[in-house]
Amino acid sequence: MSVWMMMMMMMMRRGDAMLVRRVLQHAVLRQCGVGSVGRMALLVARRGFAAYPEHVVVSMPKLSPTMEMGNIAAWKKKEGESYAEGDVLAEVETDKATVSFEATDEGVIAKILKPEGTSDVKVGDPIAISVDDESLVAAFKDYAAEEQVQPPAPTPAKAAAQPAPAGTTPNPPPSSPPSSQSRSPSAAAASTPNPSRSHGAVLASPYAKFLAREQNKTLDGLIGSYPGGFVVSADLAQAGSTRMASQETGDRKLTMMSTTELDQARSALAEQFAASKREVPHYYLKVECKFGNFREFLGDETSLDDLVIKAAAAASVKVPAVNSTWMGATIRQFADVDINVALETKSGYLATPVLRQVERRGLSSIAKELKELKRMAQEDDISGMDQSTGTFTIMMHSDVSEVSAIIRPPQSAVLTIGAVRDVLSTQPQFIKSGKVPVEKVTVEPAFTATLSCDHRVVDGAVGARWLAAFKSHLESPFNLLL
Image (cartoon, rainbow, N blue to C red):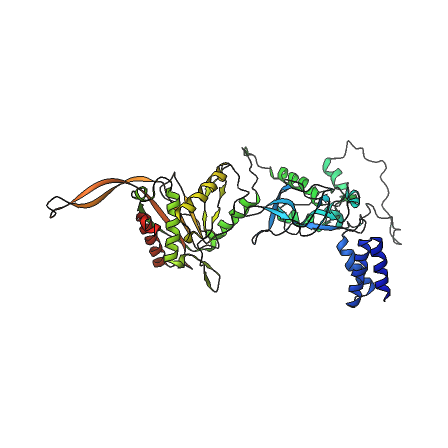
């Protein structure tokens, strides 16, 4: 029996699981040819900052394909609480929805680095510290994320006096020191050494410099809270307020009424639509749709919104080129029609939940799910909504007659429904003799449907065929029941 095996058996009898793990890690690295220095470097890397017990830094996860930052909506596990695999650690607000962050291992939350309400936490940034044993929690009471970055030694404020070279005469000292009242503020500021700068460079952690660039702030003149004026991320609030104050230099100042902080989802949506308008060649098709007959076939349980969604799915089956996406060198066509429906929430934000495989579902199933989604939007209860991107989007507006919407990438089309209005409709009829045709004039509800298309994917003739199919299905709803 080898020495390694004997040592592990002895430690397992003692119940020293942590020591067993370390011995195994050293053994594996040794078999891989890693030297003693390399083994120690690799094992210490997992432990984070060497002054603390062994721990794991929990980073902001990537909870959606397009997620770059997230907001900490709520912590489900507090400091000192243990968790098991599958437990929800926190609720994270992404660019799509509020998602549960589940643990993939077991442990104890030792320190929460990003408290509830923290916004714009980048994917990969540390948000908490986890340990294996509850007894180690107390060691991380004063832990800070910046402590993983060792600040450089502060530069001495004044260098030691050097002897003057031969042949030169040193400047004589002033006969009397200037009084503090006689010195101007600018002179005093110039003579005061700036501990946050060294040879023109700001002494700051890499993370603080990164945040300063991302937030378009300057670190010039900022004295950090760490020894020697070292700047960390927590000091950036001071930098922002200093810069804003310095920008108020005009003779006429605007009176600010209010400022609204954008959440992660709203910021991502704004960037998404701005990019779509710049890069996607839009064109628009419009048609008037009359729907006076649908009550006769469908009754009062089905709304116009339900009928629009089903008619759009049926049109996408008939003209599948619209249910596609631009891939650069190729165009990808989807088999399922997953429709995002834009709903206004109680707080005024726009939610876009997705209805899956609409082409396979009946009107009653669509009506039931849409009714529940509308209830959630009216109560601002959107955490349970699936707001991932579908293959097509529908927006319904009750206050304006026509809307030309921006396409939501990576989709290739979006349908907007204008306000319902009454229009005159004529139908040919015959008098009793059956020989003389006359026209019967009636009043019928109608709306304008506008289809926005990506010209790279959907040609003009294809978009026209889709819109004609949509109009046909909506004005003859009996076909949707077949």
